[in-house]
Every structure is written in C-alpha cells, then in structure tokens.
Length: 187
Image (cartoon, rainbow, N blue to C red; front, side, top):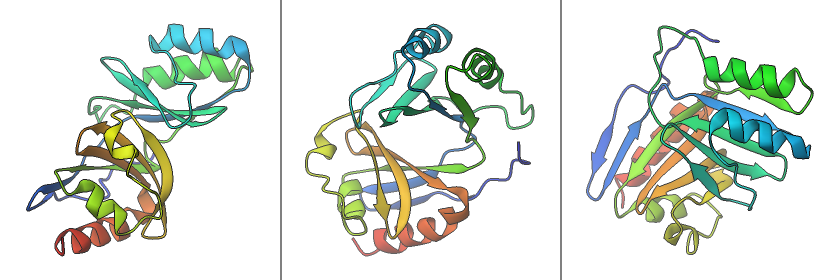
C-alpha cells in the first residue's frame, strides 16, 4: 500500500451540480474465467457478481461492477480507516481466489481516485467531454461504463438518478478535476 495522501482535497458546488472527492474507498479488481470462482466469491463477499455487461450489484457494504466478461471491480460503500491499512477482505479474497488459482485479485485502492458528481447537470457535464452516449445510461440506476472523459480513461457508475461515481487513475485525477470544475462553471 502507498502512504495515503488524498489526490484532491476540496469539494465544489455549482448551480445544480456538486463535485466532491470520496476517499479512502477500498477498490479491488478481480479476474477469473473459471466457473467455480463465482460460488467462492459469492460466499466470501455475500454479493452476487453481475454477469450482464455494464451492470453492477450491491450489498450493504460492497458494490461490484462488471468491467469485462472476466473482470470485476469491488468497492466499499463506506470510507475505510486510512491509518490501519489492513484490508482483511483483500487478504481473504487473495487466499481463496489467487492462491487456489481460481483467478487474480489486485488491490486498486491507491490507484484510483473516486469523484462523486451529483445534480441535474451531471450528464450535461459528462457529455461535453465524452464520446459516450448517455441517453440510455442516465435512466438506468446501477449502470457502469468505461469510457473517455477529456481524453482520460474513466469508469462511471450510475449510483442514483443524477448521482454518479467517477473512477479515475490517481495520476490523472488533478487534470480531470480541473477540467470538470472548468466545464461545470460554464454550464
């Protein structure tokens, strides 16, 4: 684990749009092509992984995103203790998935920053910098997509109506944060 240092330390509010960083949130990538994997991971997480493209599933503590036919990202629904750096879930998954050769488990907590966008202008903002067509996406709570936003790879999770979580690599987070705020100020 890297030493925890938030990528962005401020929140912004505009007319009909709020932008905030939510960290630290545990993020784990899991990959597998084996059928036995699903029963093991479902028992460990108490969460059924989505198998339909661009969907998600959630429980009280976790949300999982379908990223490809053999790849999912699991995120915590709550902020984790940044001081302890003890991620018991990652260890359990690693021991039951990676060590048993059912798949691969990778901790992405320090790799991705999570930005929350909320308000009636969320999809108007995203449409100004992304080639993705948000027409159907914005009506489907729980939708997930991987796309480009201002030339930066992002994962977008439609949490609630007019409320999305945007996952961006930490090294690009300041650049994207600046673009989001600049674009939001012009809406």
